[in-house]
Structures are given as structure tokens and as C-alpha cells.
Image (tube, rainbow over all chains, first blue to last red; front, top):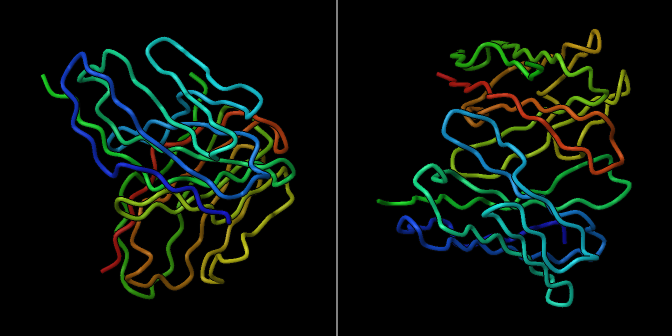
Length: 113
Length: 114
């Protein structure tokens, strides 16, 4: 119930293309869904986050789509760039759990020229 | 720049030899977390401090301990490292605990157990 399932495990996208990473959860008590970006040798950094009362959030080239009924959310990276090559983790948290984040298993994105 | 600093970045220890990893922060955040991240896996929360209040995850082995002597510093002690404890250890901080406050991660310490 506490798991967040993430797919694909790895993704190769051409420069300028759209990268799509999907996550699914079971626990309906989750109420905050952040995405983290991690470059090799660095710690994860918050990229964008959404609450379940909205279906979409966009920040620059990054968009989260959220489907509450399906218990799924996804990250879309528009106009993908080689600098976007990193590992992306979705995560989920529920209120009252002292900010404990449950992470997905990660997606390694490679954007080719 | 305010940040989360971890030392050392790479640590090699022998099987069974105690090791301490260090984290410091200049953000003046109330909460400090320790995560374990094994190769190609998601970060897994070990425990966190809210000020001086220590909160252990139920599945964190007793082999892992932590100390927070002051607001800025937090230590991860592994009393008897096993080969399975080889991982990246990430320290993170947040201003508050029960809100959507961003967690700021340090660069991690990669632990090798020989």
C-alpha cells in the first residue's frame, strides 16, 4: 500500500522530443506528489510537485499530469535537452507522516543529440 | 550559498568496523533526514530528527544510529557495517515536518564495505 510504482526504468529520447515518465500508487491517503531530479554524484533535487486537487501543473518545460481516479501521475518533459539527462524519481507523501516521502524506483533518462 | 554538506563524499570501511558519516546544513532547518540509496534503487528513509526529537523508521536496522548535537550537524553511525550496507547515504533537510516543505538533499556519501 505504501509503494509507488514507476515506469519505465530507463528512457532514451532524442533532443527536442517529449519524455514521459509514469507513476502509480495505491494509498489514497497520499496527498502530495513531488518529482525529484538526480544527476550522477549529486543528491536528488525537487523539480516540480502537485497536490491531488489539480489535474495538471506546468513549470517551464516540465508538466505533471495527475489522474486521481486512476491513482496515476506522470511527468512530461517537453523539448527534451541533453542537460535533462538524469534519473527522475516520483514520490508521494501523506499528511501527518512527518514529511516521509515514499519514492518510486527511478527512471534513468538519456537525451541524445 | 546555503546548503547541505556531507563529509566525506567517499568512505571505505572494513566489514564490522564502525563508521560515522557527517552532515551539516547552513539552512537553519528544523528537520534533518538520513536516507540510504542502493545502486539503481530509490532513496529509503532511515530516520529523521525534528529539532532534538529522533524518529526512527520501523524497518531501520539497529545497526544504524544517529546523533544531532546541534541544529547544524547530524551524524549517521553504522556500528558494525556489513557488505549489504554499501550504499549512497543521503542527508536531507526541511524547514518544517508536517507541510509540503521542500527537502533539500546533500550530495551524498558513498560507502564501500570491504
